[in-house]
Image (tube, rainbow, N blue to C red; front, side, top):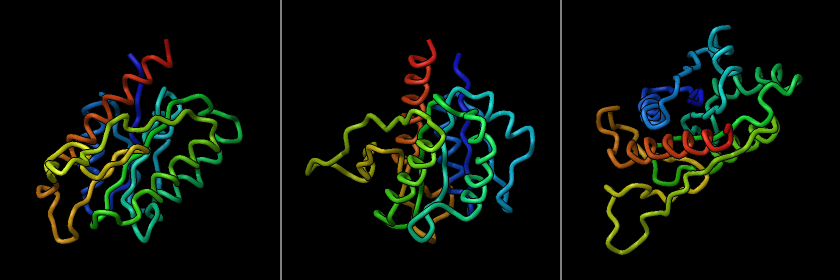
Length: 184
């Protein structure tokens, strides 16, 4: 079985809930970046041992949180030795509005993965874009690059849209499937 690590920062708990959904689908290990943007040596070891790394951050001001950026900058150490080369990579994000420039965050993850020589996996899901589509449909936000969620700024973690979490879970399943194929 492939080893999948979900490394993420969550400011208010919403991105953590997404990470948990991705992990449930991927049967992966959660690696939480702390409030100061740090990982423990054991968490770095989990990333190094993984066959796939899924990146997660809320979208703040059109990009990743500063804590995630600090982690990404610290990943220059494995970059020097090509430690993550040919690992599978993917990403997910959440912001308050339907758009919220979430695609910029996913592009940040993609660029980070390409600097490391990783292999990117998108959602593989068609969007719910018919006239009959509702907010309760899977991939209602229509992302191909990675999983997206939209949670109003005054909503609690328990008020997250269930279909966004189901999208994240299915996305995790896809990452696991691709990783298993890639690591045969």
